[in-house]
Amino acid sequence: MPDRQPTPIGALVNAGIASSVPSGQKQLAVSAVHAVADGQGAGQAPVVLPWGRRKVLLLNATFEPLTALPLRRAVVLVVCGKAEVVHGDPAGAVVHSSTSEVVVPSVIRLANYVRVPYRGRVPLTRAGLMHRDRYRCAYCGGRAETIDHVVPRSRGGPHSWTNCVACCAKCNHRKADKLLSELGWRLRVVPNAPRGPHWRLLAGVTEADPLWLPYLGEPAA
Image 1 (cartoon, helix red, strand yellow):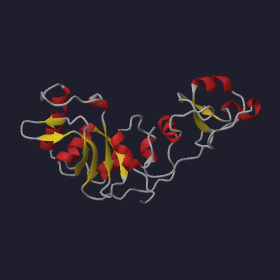
Image 2: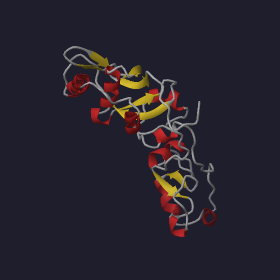
Image 3: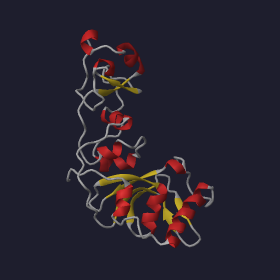
Image 4: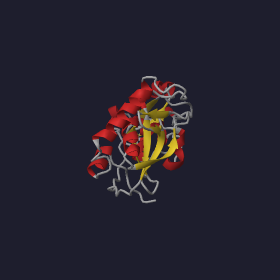
């Protein structure tokens, strides 16, 4: 798979994926989402996450991960024939309008291939760093709750992938502004900047659906 990085959905709009949506079809998708959110369509399985926080993984036609879309935008793409549902909601939820229904998607795939500009640098975010370190403390291996600068910023350490690690609250408090050599500590794993088309996506997503994992190529927790 080419080492290309996904672009924000705004760039996909400019590429013509989500543009030129007929107003009637867009209204269909929007009203359908709100109908289920308001509790209409009795008999459907409950949705796990609040509708306003639901994200859908968007794949290129080649199954390359591109970005995480709001549920409303994903439904519009499916209704307009721009994308197809690869995996539906695990609870089997369906959104309804007066004339049709759409399976609530978890993963969708574009009908046509979109060329994505290469982006080498993955932005450093708390979510991305936690995914990289698998939510484990770099010092003791316990459950990580925060991030720590290996070389403290007060002592000239940069805010970078190679100087930031996931850390538990206890180790973070004990380390404070000291160097590892002063404490006799060692890192369990040497921190590196992640690479690959899925990492830009993970850097901005705090809750990854388990159905996304086969397409991301890395465990999300």
